[in-house]
Length: 237
Length: 284
Image (cartoon, rainbow over all chains, first blue to last red):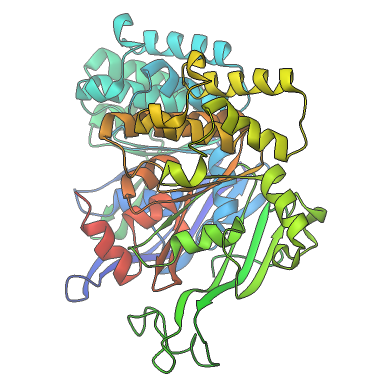
């Protein structure tokens, strides 16, 4: 299988200028490869660097050294560590999606439109996108009366459903998901897992963070175990 | 660096844009800026409002400009909109002469043309963007007339359409803005700014004077118009929540210089410069 991501010698620390130049190490010399269509699970204790690594890939964090080469469909290989902001935005828009742990809600936008937006941005009509969004929210068990409500008022589990639907609907080529099944009941967990596995079967590559053993066992073929920001183990499940 | 000269496809390319008030000498730029904590030249008291500002803006992108009062953020957009003359620099705009002409060197007539046909501006104070002696519809008509539309029926039709888009009751079209609430005045200003379908829109602290519920509505409208019309925008705000909601990329200004530029989520979650870290850590 062709490679989708090649991470080499990535290190990341935070220099806190406002707090006596305190230095916080997050990642140290991290290297790994991912193949297209693969699901890679990131594991490790809280604070081991899982989310930091994911944010470095998405370019929310700037690495201090190393390269993160994503093999894009439209633009060939791009080093996300050094690409221009414009290039990163283009990749985010067309093929890389980050599903964070918490939904960052936009005020006054109904749930169905929050979800549909991922599709309308790609040029689908609003009506079409909304229909697909409703179907997805239905499968994820979000009560019908909430579809037109504002997610800011939702419970944690309801927001999580909206968040996942938003990530899945546009079938991104490269998906980063941070704790997709936390705060969901067992049945919905399995719906989420099935939806992501369906994307994978269509070629989507996924980086997954989860503390849930069931989710990890069902989804991740390979696991990258982090300890204090270093790769402790990279193994096939 | 924040930009790459070999990149193509930009809408606006700004290089070394500088504005100095007073009598600058050759070292005025050198001895001012964040390193010295001031924008006042130690020799001549000239004020270096903006210096060496360089960036590219791409079609459909929304660029945020943040910084404290006096950091030069309003001066920057005012220079781009020709409200203020720049001291030096280069501004290329792909919608004009295919991006080959420095906008700063245009004749006044061509500057007016660029401003009326290709750009829009929404000011913090509606009085700066609207003529309070005209009706709401009259204000929009003014912008349309300046771009060469003289058909009265079509102008009224377009004004009605724009007011509807910006959720201003069309039946209030013939009232003056002074009879409107602050949020409505801001929405009329937005209608006027986008009247000629400009590819580029400047927004200078547009929600600063409004209460929170009205603020949310205006931001919602801007987001909506941006998505629907694909306008590129430069959004000036000292409010990081506004920046987070509206922009893709952000530049942080201090003492007239860019101290940091990046993707908005990076600026907010992994700020590099001491000043940006202070700004973000002060966020409620």
